[in-house]
Length: 135
Ligand SMILES: [Zn+2]
Image 1 (tube, rainbow, N blue to C red):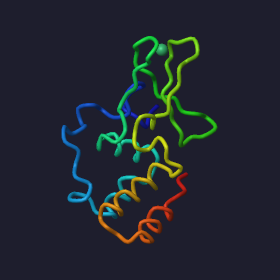
Image 2 (cartoon, rainbow, N blue to C red; image 1 turned 90 degrees about the horizontal axis):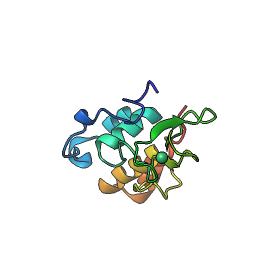
Image 3 (cartoon, rainbow, N blue to C red; image 1 turned 45 degrees about the horizontal axis):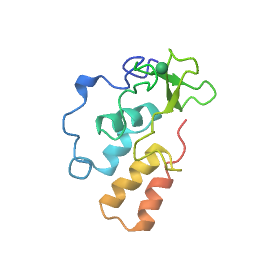
Image 4 (cartoon, protein in one colour; image 1 turned 180 degrees about the vertical axis):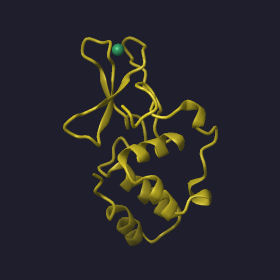
């Protein structure tokens, strides 16, 4: 999993700030866009902002799950326990604000940013839906 820090951690824990940067005060929409051009970059950004967990503990055997990439969907990663009989799987979004969303991570993040910046709703939609496809 070359894109990520280790088999069990998305980001090097030592580079995650104690206090996430303030999205509104410290980020412009352009900087945010540049920081989230690929799915891997977006996930790293969200982990550093503490919007996604950096690791996942298996409820059954109390071991860290491993990052698992679905070969059919290269932009989709999940947590998978290598230990359990049924390889307990979990979305990396489970338990986060992203878990119930139909939008992609970057779409929802962009929407949140525009909403917090008090852009008009049509502009929030425009800015977030125009960035739908990532290859
Ligand atoms: Zn397990």
